[in-house]
Structures are given as C-alpha cells and as structure tokens.
Length: 555
Image 1 (tube, rainbow, N blue to C red):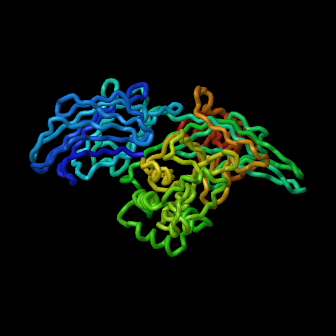
Image 2: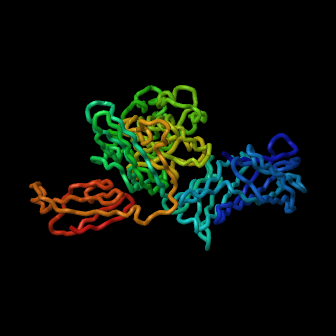
C-alpha cells in the first residue's frame, strides 16, 4: 500500500521541483480531513505542467475540492478499487524559469484511521516522495479524546498541543521511505478462549505440559478467568513461558479450556539509546546466540552476511536494525501461502541462499540467525495477530482448521531488555515494525532455547474440524480483571539459614488470575502457590504485577 503522485507536462523529462505541505486533521469519528498544498517551481523557461494526479490504494476518498493558481478547478475522481485517487488540471499555467504553479486539494478519507478495541490506530501508507521534491512537510492533528499517545512513527521533529488536538510535525528526512503509523488510547484488552486437546496414546500414564499465554514485560499482562480442568502444577520455563502440566491416564483424552484476557501495550524505542555489546549479561549471551535447527549461525553464507552487517561503532539496537533492514529489503513474501494446506518451514539458511518467496517463519528465522551470529541474543515469538482484512499484514503460520498464527522476533539489548520486532510486516506493509509493534496481537509462546519447542496453542488437537483459538477485542473491561488478590499463611520453618536471618516461612497463594512477583524475583502464576520467607520483625510484604501495580499484604 503506497501513496503516489505524478504530473503531466509538455516535455518528457522533469524540469521543475515539487514541494509539498500536507495536513491530516483527524476527526473524532475517525474520518481524516486532508489538505495538500503543492508548489511546482519551473527550472527552465519552456516547462508547462498541465495536471497533478494522486493515487492511494485502500483509501476511500470523498468530498474532493481543488484550486489551481488560486482558481477553483474541477477534479477528475477515480473511485476504482485498483487505483483510487484524483487528477487536478493546472489552469493559467505560469511559464518561465523560477515561476511557481500552486495546487491546493482538500478531501476526506475513511481509510487512514481505525479503532480496534480501545485503541485508535492511524496508518498513512508508505509515501513515495518524488526525486524532484526538496520540501515535504506533514502535520497530523489527533483529537485528545483518542487518549494518550502510545507510539508515533516515524518520530516527529516537533510535537505540540492545542486545546482539542495533539499536533505532530514531520519533514522529508523523517520518513526515510516509510509511512506513518501511530496508536492512541489506553492499553488494548484482548479476550481469548483457547482449547488444548491432549491425548495419551500410551498404555502408561504421562504428564503433558502445554504453554499458556504469559506475562511479557513491556508488552502484555495476562489474566486467567478460568482453567478447566485445573492443572496439577504450573511452572515457568527459562524462556518465561508458563507451562501447565496435566496427568493423563492410559489411552486418555483430555480437553483443557483456558479463558482469559490480555492487556497489550507496545513500547517505542529510540535506537540511539541502545546499550553496548559488552554490557549484555553472559548467561543471556550464551543461551541465545547459539545455533539451533532453523537458526543457522555456523554456515558460511550466514557468517559472511552477518560480518558485513555488524558495525562495531554502533550500539546493539542499531546493529539489530541493520539485520532487520537486510531481511526486510532482501526477502520476498509468499502471498499464496494462505491458499496452501501446508507450508513447510525452511529455516534461515534456505531463505538466505535460495530464490523463492517466504512466510513469517523464514523472515523471523533469518533475522534471529543473523542477529545471533552478530552476537545479539534473539528469540522467536508465536502468537495471534489481527490483520483486519489488510493484505499487507498476512498471517500464514497455518495451524489446522483455521487457527492462523503469526511469528515475529525479539532481540536483547542491555538498556531496554527484550525488544519485539516484526520483519515480515515491516516488509509487506512498508510500516516501521522495528522501533515498535502494534497492540493488535497476543503472544502465545516464546522460543529461544529451542527453535521448535514449545509449540503454541492451536497445535494441540485430537479432533479435526474444530477451531481451538478464539480471540477478540474486549468491549467491556471489568475493573476486577487485572486486580491481584492473594493470601499468606505461615508454616513451619526447617530452614536453619533462614532462621538465623530471623525469617519465617510462608506459603503465598495467588487467588487471582494475574501473575504476581515477589521482591526477590519469584513468580507466582495465576491460582498458584509459592514458598517464601519474610522477616519476623515486619508484618507486611509487597507484591507487584508486570505493569508495576503493587499490593501490600499483612502476615
């Protein structure tokens, strides 16, 4: 999806400069009032510009009016689905070197702003700025009633505030070939209902572990309203996944249903504030830079490309950005993948060395392999993403019977921690998916120690023809959904070391569906328990949630 402009003139070659001053004034109903002021400056005496045309796929343009050299002119409107836009004739053309022809066009469009759940999303398509353009100024007016800014990309050069609007100013150097993407509002709340169909084909009883959607610092907080049946135990693996264990008897089938919500946000990073390679913790470096089945870090071509990309004078984030840009610029997406019953995962080496079209799996695999080879810890995230019918944001990770998932990546920076990015949608949409993501996705599983496991929800089934994942935007959030509740009970202390320190032993029970975190770093999953020690001199402990909410508990 892109915005393009063109001109007709008497000669076959461009003989003038073109400057733009464009404003997008977004109304509270989501309709954008757009005004384009275009100035053509003649570079030679015999240039005669005759018309100005504008096209933007997937934008519905209405109520168009135009002026040319201060004269009202009629507009030729193209309402076709393939190339909607308009053409403006230039009247009373001014001829001669240095003369300027000015065009002013006003119109409304319904294609730039969409409200998903509690968040307003703004997408101005990738802008193709002509080579003859020296000035390209853009102002975006956003109603304050949309709520606080979650992110705005590219980063505006100036942000101002009026009585009813926020105003963002951008210039030609701001865009760097990308469009505008922004989000306003509180955190997005996504409701989910997930089924796990477990089957023990053995005559011996087994323990079956499945990953549940988990908290991810800076990105999502989950709350479970019901898990049926209740798991025998819940553990957190080294990648941060919540693994719920169920015991199945001989030849037993068991369907587990999880119902809950996720509060999703997306931080926007500044690449200039990334950390140094030397500050990456050694344990993270050793875990997340090694070779795995689909993340080839020891092959000649991967090493060659990674070596050519890495710049020792840049920080971790900017080096990761080089790997991201390489993947975005060099892979072609397979838009026919959704029409196939099965798409085999090829891995990073094949995607890099063989010609072809690829899906989100290869985009993610190649980024991870290049980042790891450059010494940047990297992992995979699998989840559910809303594309709202937008072909530029495809979902080809096909889990049987309609459970379409998406894969993206994350890398580790010592200043920011884990940063999620999406090279696939960055390539297909022309939107910046490096400095931020969007709030229209639910992460289901993180893969770092293994490129194949754990498998995400939607992979566990014994019955064909049934959709296992149901996800939708929340329409009415309860204030209790993300409210933590707990109880503390003192138990007998046999730990001599803790006794010497003057601590007593307690069992903390999480009575809510949200995750709780102790001051010493322990994680208490929803409806789970943890043993911890508190000082006998105090009678109060503080627990927190992933978003920083604290709860005091007396004991």
